[in-house]
Length: 412
Ligand SMILES: Cc1cc2nc3c(=O)[nH]c(=O)nc-3n(C[C@H](O)[C@H](O)[C@H](O)COP(=O)(O)OP(=O)(O)OC[C@H]3O[C@@H](n4cnc5c(N)ncnc54)[C@H](O)[C@@H]3O)c2cc1C
Image (cartoon, rainbow, N blue to C red; front, side, top):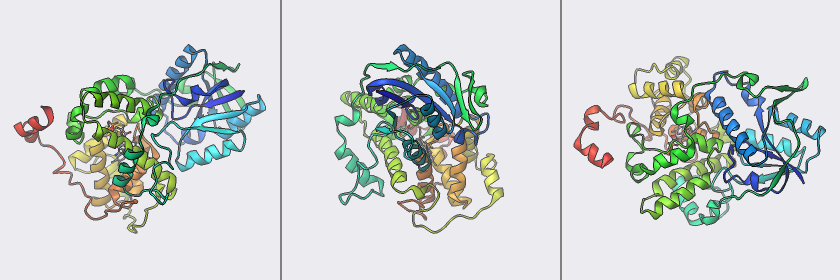
């Protein structure tokens, strides 16, 4: 059986369900021109993806396989592949935002589509209310998710023996209206410039987990303080699948065996699932409020000040500067900035969402959109009036940082 293994949000070999599909296989990755053409040449995420692909390619080579690289629209790439070979199916794991779903639907009209579950802990229909409708509030979703969660959700996928399909793995295959051309495997071939990633962005996810082992016990107390660097920094890896969510869960179980309270961290992982589930069931949330009718008051000058870190509010401007420079922003600062844009500047949340989407390394449609909706108070769980972060009281002063109370609570 000849099968195409389509890597998308799972750029790794370890614990990857694609590698447990029997058959002769053509592993591929597509640089989707529909997405890439809208990005600036210095987009940092493309450098991250490119490095991850080179790692994936050599890890596949070590298993006797390889990775074929394409540039073009996915449907055109599949049409070209089918004109030049015969394949039983394409196997790929999940992506639930509207663009991904319509892209996959289009491909499934060309070739049988075998969906394998990988990206999230639960499938989008797994954690539902008793009446089979989706939860709209996190806490009941979380309680239900905890009750359903079992060892099968952490099961490691064991690779089977797969034979590589003969193919030119040494080029990027560009497929467009002019047909097929081959390009050298380099970022410049697809018109992007190599960006300097931060040390954190270059760090392998396993190393991040090891570092985080020392922080996990204090996660609950320290996670809201950016100065304490107390979180896992795994979001970009989880976004692109350079680590498997099940590997993180298995690691968490090991931590729990050592007596560490793992629940606060588990809860954040479930947030990721909750948001993916919401966007899957309520796709209109990508651009529209759930029920709440205030749409924001457009003001280009306020927005420009926000996006260029010139609001005059130190913590907001610091957060935006970090985002522009590195593609990173601590969760608490994201919340403060999102609150400031929607509740102080009264701008439409969609503007802030689109701005974050341009720069965040870990940009993920569901987490970003639903977090902005949460901050604006316009989503499924609306709290439009009192969910406001005061940027001044949210800023920890040097005096507070040096106080005995703070040290006792956070360092001991
Ligand atoms: C306005 C706004 C926009 C956001 N946009 C994104 C985004 O585009 N992509 C993204 O991955 N996260 C987003 N988040 C959530 C959160 O800020 C990041 O996941 C977190 O900062 C990543 O750092 P970490 O890996 O060290 O997190 P940790 O605290 O170590 O958490 C572990 C993992 O849990 C998940 N997680 C944690 N908190 C949340 C949360 N509130 N919502 C969803 N998942 C969570 C992430 O996958 C994260 O890697 C956004 C939050 C806000 C307020």
